[in-house]
Length: 452
Image (cartoon, rainbow, N blue to C red; front, side, top):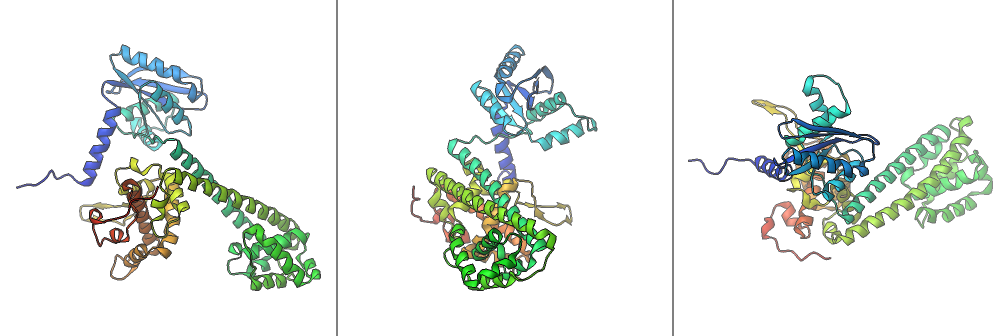
């Protein structure tokens, strides 16, 4: 005797998604599909059989399309429909303006992935022919087939966190680029300086000393030796506060003092390269100040949302680390489960099986790259300070486990962090190591109420 429906978890999640889409893309509503551009918008109104009811081209910005929505509503009413659904690709910021106009008009709204439109274009007539009107029709065709999604509707706090996260990401990218440029320039013009510390670009003493050298040497580091080591060391100590440090490492300072006399490198490039390094160091300090300010603002938003204590309850995760992840996910409650957040990051395992064939399983990488990067970076301090995560990593890489590689195990730990963060925020309960380790069930845990 069969028990249950036989539905898998994937079936149930898919059914819930279809039901949510059908609530918006109802059969009594026509679909207005818009191919968004900067100054020209191509629109097509279709029914649920894919028939075109009307077309229109508007030369206006996306935020000026209120008249287009009204026109489409009138056309839909004359065709016997009781409402309207607006569909488009998530193009830059324009789709957000169009969503606001659709909401103001009482219409539904959905988005279609550009990749789906690209594949549908090739599948339609097996050519690469592309026009705005054709793309608009394909958007409408995918929407009526429910090959679309309902976009995030962030409130003011969550939207602000996302913008701050984007700014932080840009600042971090600039910092990394600046470090790489400094290393390349010194490798060409003064390679001896790079050998004075194990990780020179991570040492505040080395950075302060380079600030002193590049500010005073005029392209010839050896000239600073005339001042004597004591004055050189005193200048480094005065420079340290600009890098947020108080004490200098004598070994690194002495190493750079000795490197001043090294004539290695391309002599013709030295003056210009050291001048450029000096400018990059100034940029670096400005970027560090901007980064600290941005992270402070992100912590303030997390406080405003009442999530700081919850996020920081996970061992090894800082408030900033959690804010960076949440800036990419948005409100976690919009996801059906922690697995959905992992899939959104592209950290979910992508199987490759068919009948008796079992191919290699890798992470899908089909999610949000910024979220994947944030989770990956959060896994590194997590492995140092979180005993549950450290034990999981040891199990995955140990002989008794799955024998995963280091990168595979760290990806699995990053996915675990995303699931934990989803759980503590949606349930409003602090992280519990016993639940995370699986020693007690989640329903049986007794935890203190979250602060805030």
